[in-house]
Image 1: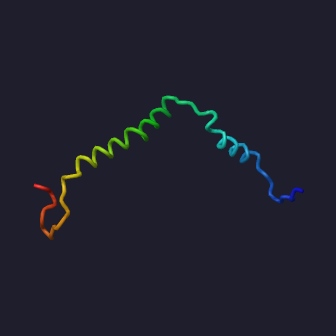
Image 2: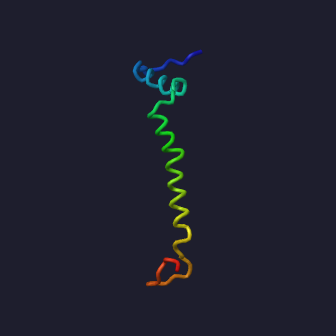
Length: 73
């Protein structure tokens, strides 16, 4: 037994929801989506890794006092 609904459904919103739910069915790799994928999955993590590995042993924070240099010698 169905319960009566007092909410009217907007056809435009229903079409938009259906489009969002079925987006994976119509996805194709184009030049733009390939560039976005490469940037997010390869370029940004490699830049973060490079910066982290270059500055890993550059500074020494243990036992420093006011006025002491943080750069390792």
